[in-house]
Image (cartoon, rainbow, N blue to C red):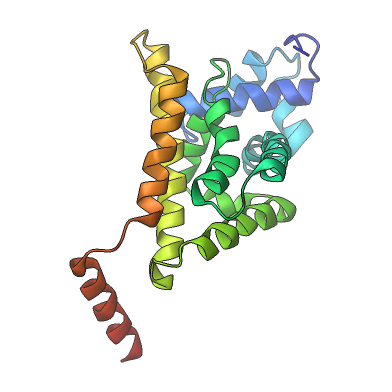
Length: 218
């Protein structure tokens, strides 16, 4: 059910306002007072009152949507073919792709900004970190044709690709420029992620891996 801005709690309004302002202007480009004013709170020190610090606010913004994303993923995993790479990748990433279609949501852009400061995974609540790690383990087990040293690299890259492609699509729509139909966007993006994960490594990559391993043993 849609919840109007007015009916949200002051704390949630602060989180959503911070999400939007940090997404548009960067984590260092928004005074806490501005967040309070644009959130419509009477107390200009509302951020400090509800969160204590800017860092705590940033963590709250990151965590705000994660539980809903994980619940949606759990439903998709329950219906997924867990032996199929594309099915697992879709269950993990479709909730994020869907979130990127919400024109009032700036979460993906916020995460992009946060990535410039620290890897978001390490700032998730412990239970959400476990869910994320379970995906790494699950899809990693399906990449039997990919050297173990490459699997985590590829999984991280695929996650980053999904985030940035969806963020770029959101920005493109905001500029009033055309974007591909949603069905094409989703299917092509999943194709790209699966290809990135499963592609047979080239001879050049295998040689680079051997050099990396040799350097580590010395």
